[in-house]
Length: 130
Image (cartoon, rainbow, N blue to C red; front, side, top):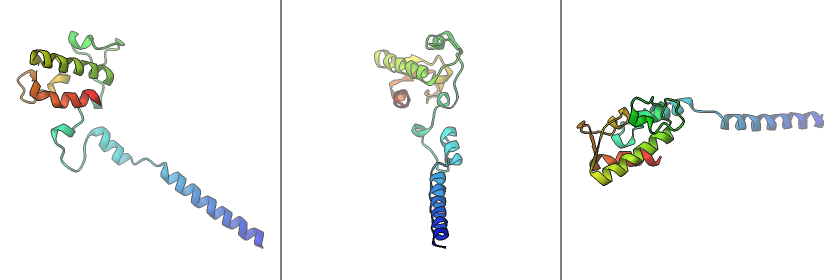
């Protein structure tokens, strides 16, 4: 009888441990999808939004972008976009502005004047580092 009680207790203890271990590994897909899609219930400022190129891999659309397509697959991976953004930062710091030559850069042109200026570099710096 004591043996049966011990076995029963061990089974209950192991069951509790397994349930806790299994629940610790569950993924909150709602939270994950909000992070991926960049949407939350609270409003975001422009500085907190995820750029489009980080959500989906952009296609190379012109010769300027083709320079940054290192693996020549016709897509700009995030590392390649970050190199492009760093070059834009350098150019703006040297010359004062750069012409928007890419759909990627259009996201950063806040005043839609087709130039990236020093005033618009904060978001580019943030995204180039991440």
